Structure formats: C-alpha cells, structure tokens
Length: 578
Image 1: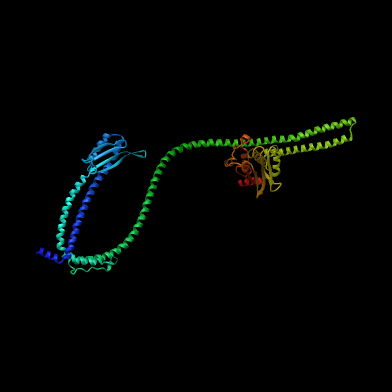
Image 2 (image 1 turned 90 degrees about the vertical axis):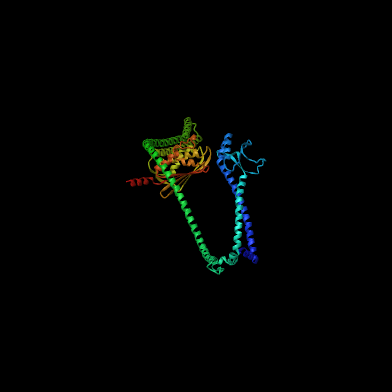
C-alpha cells in the first residue's frame, strides 16, 4: 500500500521526483568524489608517513654516519645502514663519497626489472664541520617501496566503498519517503523568506512559514526569529566589544612589553651589580693586604722623599747662585774686552804725546825750535788730548756701568732706579756680544725716565739672560733680526715685553722652557738654567708673573708683570702676616 502511494505521488509530483533524482545523483557523485578524496588523502598520509620516517632517520643518523665516513670506518657504516633497514618503510640504504661511487649499499633499491620508479628516495649530504667551516664528505640515500603506500590505500578503499554504498542506499530510502512530505514545501518557503533577510537590517526581518507553531517547523521558526533578533543584538554588541577589546589589548600589550623590558633591564643590571660586587669584594680583600704593605713602604718613601726634596732645594739654590756667578763672569770678560780698546788707544796717544814732547824739548834745547814746529806741537797735543780724554771717558763709563751692575747683582738690595737707563747700562756691559751679532735691539717706553722701586741686580740678571738666550737660540750666527724691549705701566704694575722675530718655539718647548736644565741648544752654550732663573726671580722674588707666546718661524714674546714698588708689596705682606 505504501509502495503504491509512493509511485502515485511520484507520477503526480514529477517536479519533486526530478528534484529528488537530482539530489540523489548529486549525492552519488559527491559520495564518489568524497571517496576519491579519502583515497587520495590516505595515499598522501601514507606517503607523508614514509617521508617522516626518512627525515627522522636523517636527523638521527647523519652525524654518526658523517663521523664514520670521515674516519673511513666502512664496516661501521655497513652496520649502521643495516640497522636503518630495521626502521619501518625503509627498504634500502646507499652511501657514497666524493672520491668513489657507492661505499655501502644494503637492502632493495629497485624492482626485478631494475626500474626505480616504484621507489621513493630521499638523499642528503654528510657534512664535516670544523673550525667554523663546513665541507661535504659524502651523500646518503634512503629508499622506500611504494607497495607499502598502495597496500594501505587498497585496504582503506574497500572500507570506503562499502561505507559509501550503505550510505547511498539509506539516504535514498529516507529522502524518498520524507523529502516531499516533510521538507520540500516548507523548506522552499523557509528558503525563500531566509533569502529575503537583509543582513544589514536583521531587526526588521521575520520568518512566517509554519501554520502550527507547536510542531518542529514552528519551533524552528521561533528559534530562527529569536536567533535573528539575538544575532542582530550580538553583532552590535560584538562590534562595540571588538573595538573596545582591540583598544584594551593594544594598551595591555604595550604595558606588558614595557614591563617585560623593564624587568629584563633590571634583571640584567642586578646580575651585573652582583658580578661587580663579587669581583670588588675579592679585589678589595687583595687590595687591603696590598694597601697595608704599600702603607708601610709609603711611610719609608715619604721620609726618603722629604730628604731628597731638601737636598734638591739646596742644590737648586746652589745652581741658581752658580748661574748668577757664571753670568757675572761672562759680564766681567765682556767688560774687560771692551775696556781694552779705549785703554789701548789712551796708552798709544800718551806714548805719541811723550815722543812729541821730547822732540820739541830737543829742538828747544838746540835752539832750532821754530814757530811752525811749536804750532804743529800744539795742534797734535790738542788732538792727542782729545783722543785720550774720549778713550778714558769711554773706559770710565764702562767701568761705572760694570760696577753698578756687578754691585747690584751681588748686593741684591731694593732701591729706586730708572729701569730704561739701567737697561742701557746693562747692554753697554754686553756690548762685546751685541756688536758680534747683526740683531738690532729697539727699546720702546711709555715714559723716560721710568722710575721703579725694585731689585736692580735682579733686573740686570733678567736683561742679561733674555739677551743671551735670544742670541743663542732665536737666531743663527750672523743672522739679521729685530728685538723689541717694550716698557709701560698699568695701574701699579710694570709691564715688560721682550719680543723677537727669530726661530720661535714648538709647543713642547713652550711647556718646558721654565724647567731647570731644559735647553734646545746645549752645543752652542745653552745651560738650561737661564729661563728658570728668570722665572724664579719674577715669581718668587718680585711677586710677579711671566708668560710666553711663540710659534715656529714667527718669533717669541715674553711678558713680565711685576709691582712698580716692590717695597710696598713686601711691607703690605708683612703687615698682613702680623
């Protein structure tokens, strides 16, 4: 009875039957496709299983095989290759090196016909790594028979075909009975209404298909309408929540990254501090012992240093006095040489005058004196007396200048004097050296006379040392040049500038020029004490300052700044001490 009704329904509603046939056909095709896909997936799965085993074998054995190959231990290589054959899915192993062909070949690597198409092979190099260099020493190849894959696929294929046949039969029966009565028409209406739903306006979309709201279709309708409403609300909430969540996640992520970075930094700092403290504690323990030893040695060294310093100060004072005496000796020699000329001229004039007088006396005694002879005698006498007077005056001036300078240098008393005149007298004492040079000395002064209350002997020492230092170091022998000696006052200070246009000095010489025993021309008479003596006189004795400026081949400039009245400075210091 049911079968007759079914065929009547089939004839009356041919459209539904066609639709059912199409559905069943599509389902059959899909079942075949799905079965084929399952078969292919099983094939790929089996093939991947083989590759996985081969790659795992590579990772496990490549270092061991490379080591054995490098040591040419072919027996061990063959044993390792046979042990690899015990792994699943591996049917053959071939090992080759760069110098020879196959070193080791075990298992099956081809079928009976010698074709290798039925096998899967995987090759990888055997590498030797030493001293940061990697070299290939050989190759290993694993072989696997595809029969394993095909057997697995065949077993799965039989099960899949049986399952597909059962499914198709069951679906055909069920769909044929229930399709039209339960689903065809209602689902068509439902599909129609669902297709009319506007996704952007779910709130105004409602499904009205079921007539009986109590059956499954009515329940489905209620559920769909409720789902549409909740979906609309949920989408809105999700959009808002998604935006809020994204913002919150970004903030939390940034905060977390910052916190992690800070923790890492603090951790690193803490580790570094711990290491530093541990090292410092060890070093401190060692240093403490060394410090105690060094302390005792330092006490002894201080005593020795104090003794050496006293001896050095005594030696320095003696050297300065020796330099002064040497300068005075050179001054005596120069003055003696200068005095020799006028004294010699005076002696020559007096001798000639005596001869002339004796000749006149003889003529007078013999009565042969004539007026012309007496006139000639008078003229020669006047000329000789003038020559003798000038020569003796020059010698007297030299002696007076030498006496003044020598007494001032030895007495070292403060007195008022004209420093310009004193410079001229000092230069007169040095005339013997000055006339041997082509260097011109020019004196410029703000006022003449320029009276100061100071140590005249010390100034003579300063002038002498500057002039001799310039002639020795600033100019070559017979070189022409110009030296300016400038004097001017500022407030209660005397400024003296000594400027030459000679060779100049290097930066190293400028830094060391006032150091004792430093000289750049010791072979030509430089003692290394001249500028040190000047420095000590200016700084310690005259309470002044001395500076130097110089460049190579651009000359040198010395500037001395001292009080005009040094007696007032000394009395002020004594009152301050009291």
